[in-house]
Amino acid sequence: MFKYPFTTFKHLFSIPTSNNYIMSSTARIITRQRSTTTTTTPIIVNSPVVKKKTTNIKNNKIKNKKVEEGGEDLLKAPIEKKGFKPLDSKKRCFWISLTKDEEYIHYHDNEWGKENRDSQRLFEKICLEAQQAGLSWITVLKKRQNYRDSFYNFDPKLIVDNITPEVIENSLMKNTGLIRNRLKLQAIVDNARAYLKMRDQDKIEFSTFIWSFVNNKSSIGQRVTGDTSVQGSRPLTRNEVSDAMSVALKKKGFKFIGTTTLYAFMQSVGIINDHCKDCEFNPINQKKNI
Image 1 (cartoon, rainbow, N blue to C red):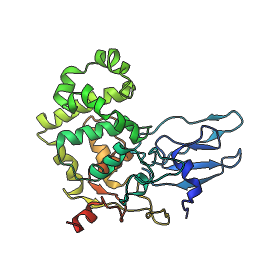
Image 2: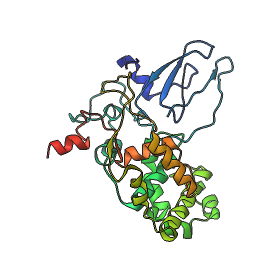
Image 3: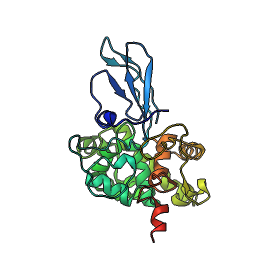
């Protein structure tokens, strides 16, 4: 059982570039290297995939740099390190409670974990989750409006009709407001094409397809036992539903939709409610206060 001593918070949010600490871009484990051996002591934190890396301390290099598709790395919220005072007195999830970033707090309070059944908005979210792979969610959130502007507000038809490989190469790859990864940008076009095929040929609405994996009902996320934090044990990073959804979407032609990415997607659109129990913005608590 690992606890979160307050003295380690600075390491959770601002990882030194030295080889004493390493963190997979999509990992949910921060590992402290205590020697030149591969023996490690993991500090488990509440943030969605586990990716193991080995560090060559002698040469100061990190091996195995391949990045897995990952979900929202929620704990990478910017925080005030000295004299921190919360933005307000509201009780929020642990991962957002140590930041003053108003955009991130607004996302937690008004979007994350709220049920979303609009097909185009679900399409947008699944594409943005794919852009996040290997990065923190706050990075994508800060660029979200740029993506909406560049990809026609995530209208699949307009994307397919207008975003060509030449547009990606000559325009989007030069846009500093986007994550300039050619494969990720092309994945949005591929996903738009798969979306249209599902809708126009298979006659299946995207929202209906997504919610069918949970029988059209949201559920409370399960927690990993034996692991404690300030506000309860950490959530899962994948489950059987995200596994099945990943397989099904890949068969339909979607890209960058690994199981961990899709679990984070399900958390964000309210298919799974992973708000902390005492969070004021937990849908269950909000219903009680009505």
